[in-house]
Image (cartoon, rainbow, N blue to C red; front, side, top):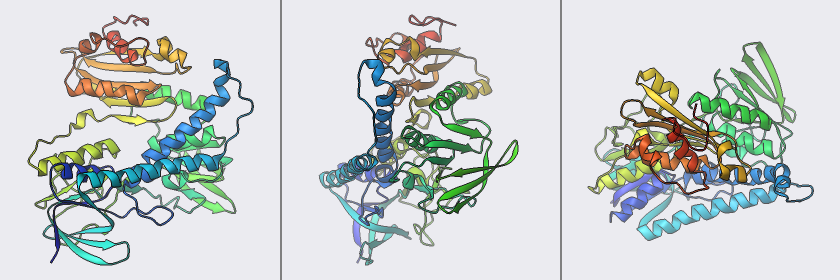
Length: 475
């Protein structure tokens, strides 16, 4: 007889493990299945985010930024260090330690919430049954009143540049390099490509980024994108737009890349090539025939606004469904579903999901871009405040960038906030909260911000929308 649970979650990443924990908090019996394997062959919960994405990349970004600041900024503070060298092995060891502590933390959270963690593969069968294949290859059947599919995503592999370690790498392999490449190529100038490119550029690589689109950061507000491009160029990132890769082949110990741009066929020789051309939903061997769960044209699991699939009692959340592939979006969907299953209120406001790029300067935004608002035809106003006018930013030697707020002309509703500058990923939370509660730009104008703080930039941007900024010239 099948082992029965109230809820079975297939996938232990940033969508799956929060869903399992919240279901446990709601006093439901829960099992969470995950098949993630680390390079040492061991199983670990946390998915791509904790094991090979969000957390390890931020660890290396922090380390590499410290290297840059020690070499370029410390002298401005009156700090003399002498020659700065990089111990990449220690840097990677530190990163791995952070990852291990994070994944082990999930095991402790499972225990505290009464979640049964199962290391292995889960496959949905008809009738809310799940075939579980353990680490030892043994199989057994489980059943549940509700099944949550949280199988995540994997890097897109290009036919023109198939992965071939150690020369042509996906985003995970790019985090595991044991030496700094002299010449590094990156396919894709999106979030992953820019972050990984920044890490290795700071550590000494000559980095060339090939982006197929003619516009840089087309998903972002273009005033912000142009500011970002200027800073990346200054940092030495060679970003080539409209460059579509047609071939990448390993030749000896280098990679020969061929791409097409407005000038015709071009070539590039690099020591290592990172393919960061996006991610796709991962549903391999997830669904048996007859489950009633359908995929859309992009390979994502079809769900409604509350993440219900077409099969009764089966839900799907995170990267394997529609919407942005962001860990925080995944987490909120997992929590929403676990609460809905328990008869509680659950909702995700997809209009207020922030995006962050953890480069230096950081880039963050929420809501509509100015281009989107303009296209809608709704009259609007814009306020921009440069960090150059922020006393705190200047004291930090991080006065690059600006905060930008877009509000409706008629009722003053905040439509979008876009920040490039120090700690943008932290500052955007205020804008998200304001928009979640339908605040106006005047509400932010009348909110007292401590001085001197970086958050004053958001305050001043709101004031600037009505040409009432105090610490910058209103234009």
